[in-house]
Image 1 (tube, one colour):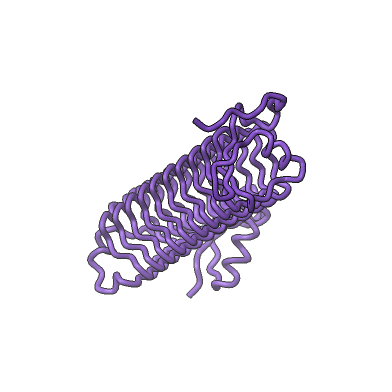
Image 2: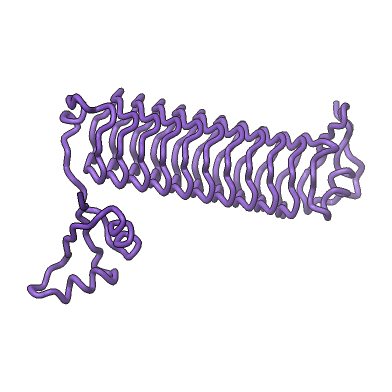
Length: 308
């Protein structure tokens, strides 16, 4: 069955709608799934279907309902089971989905701005290009979820489990990921500018070409992480663990590196390895710890201070 899409007035389709006779501020089009994608790419937007939350919870087929484009703005879906449901393009702005079961749910391109997803189960969920701006995902389980291209600006992900999640090209600027588990996560090309990653577990994470400028990475575990080409300018890496991390071509301009632990297998940008050796002291089994100011632009003429 086709879906109704609504044009924006400033888009090409919107201009077509304005020239229609009689004149209409918008044009409603019933389109197949394929044409819907084409129209959305051309500037159209879906017309949401308003569905009461109570009817979803009461539905005998609630295990896998088709709620494509549903309008669930501000809905109370606390503890609901929406596993395997299709909520693509749905409007869940401000909805309460705390402790909800959303495993393997299709939430691609859904609007979850400011939604409450505290402790929600989103394992294996499809959240590609979803809008999670300022959403609360505190302690949510997002293991192996797909968040590629998602918008998580200012989102709260404190203590969230994002192990093996796909966050490639996601916008996590100013997001709070304090203590989050990002083990093995794919953050290739992600925007983590000014994000808080303090004490986060990024063991084996792929951060190639990621923007971590001004990010807070204090005490973060980046063991074995791939930071090839990452932008770490003005990032705070105080006391972080960079054992076996790959920082080839990474930008460390004005980064705070005081107290970080690294190993003989850590790959530094060519121009930094000598600096790191001069500033660091050995702490055993091939490990080193950075002393002094730790900044890449620091005066390195003073010998490193021994570990007390």
